Length: 196
Image 1 (cartoon, rainbow, N blue to C red):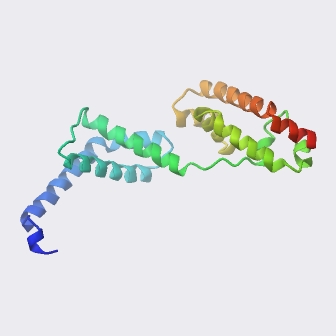
Image 2 (image 1 turned 135 degrees about the vertical axis):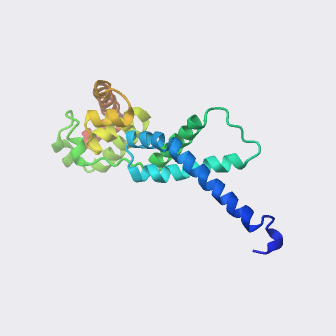
Image 3 (image 1 turned 90 degrees about the vertical axis):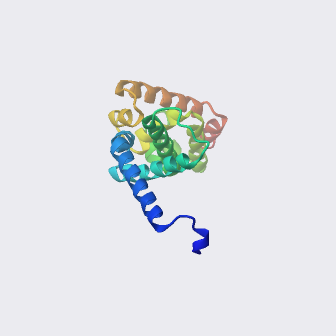
């Protein structure tokens, strides 16, 4: 880099880096455990906590550089809000897509496996069920995916979602009943049974 483009002398740059290092250490000491608690509570690992905290610090310090930035809440609240948003984005981006299996269909008691195996349009039915799950609502979709595809217990789902275990059991039952009704009442399912 040309010295004429660099307005700071080396000692000023070193002091600036030392100040930044101190700010990062203070931020880490003040807020890492809060971010760690949030990530671990929401199915993350300690490594996820470290990676996320680096991203949070980067966002925070970049915001602080902006003259128009004004912290309207406590630093802790801001850090946790950024962490929450970044973590939810990461979960959304890495969430597996729903692909129902034949084993999952065994959990729907109203359909016999013989009917499904006899059909030439089994994949059409699976596609329809996949689309139905996408339309039942975020909360039901998450509970059904965790319960039937990730094989998580009601207690594990409760921990991941922050709801009580009893609520998860009731909600899972209601979501599954709603999904069954949607699938069984559909013209596509009736056509599927007629061609079997």
